[in-house]
Amino acid sequence: MFNIIPSYVQEYLPIVIFFAIATVISLVVMGIPIIFAESKPEKDKLAPYECGFEEFGDSRNKFDVRFYLVAILFIIFDIEVIFLFPWALVLKSIGVYGFVSMMIFLLVLIVGFVYEWKKGALEWE
Image 1 (cartoon, one colour):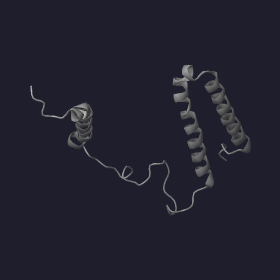
Image 2 (tube, one colour):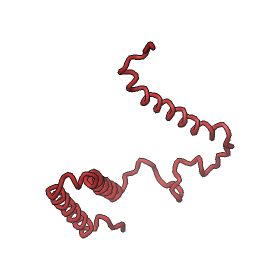
Image 3 (cartoon, helix red, strand yellow):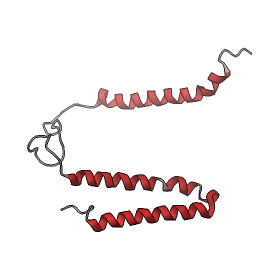
Image 4 (cartoon, one colour):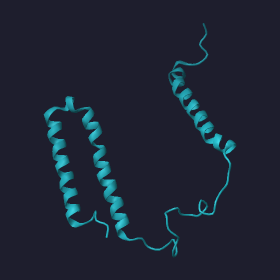
């Protein structure tokens, strides 16, 4: 039997098929509402912000630094917590050294969290 497709292409064929199917499904899921849904835009839905209160002032005004502080603290603690997942998966293979090093990491994380809490960075006035 002839083999028209080279072997290195055959190895990637399932991946290409997967991406093709994923693309078709996503286009269908995005296209169905465009075809079948009624479009009745309201004034409130077309407003640039849906935050629950009327707009005030210029949108280029400076924000309070607390917005940035809360966002940065969330990102820092969120990324540090992400490190727990791979550690939990390989805990048996890394042994006591891996466990102790993660406990030190968590201790530093908790100390930082308590420090931020005591400084009032998590309070919204």
